[in-house]
Image (cartoon, rainbow, N blue to C red):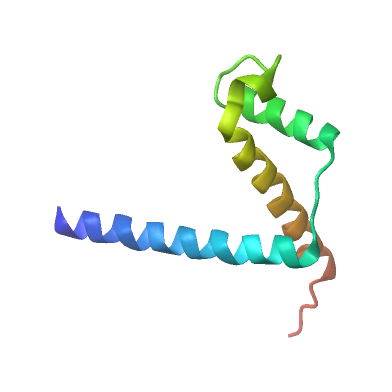
Length: 88
């Protein structure tokens, strides 16, 4: 039981650190998403959790912050993959 709690705590700390760094990168790169991207992201997220995608933005409420963050994070990852230089 204690080992399980310890692992959950370590996973949570790693997640928070990752999101903190990613948020800093998003702000530094001034990453934005359009209204169309937000709308599409909201519908996609709603479908993924079994919600009706119609009026998804209104129905998701504060979860829209997560949708927006995830869309921006994906743009950062796409940029990093496009510009990665792999050396052997």
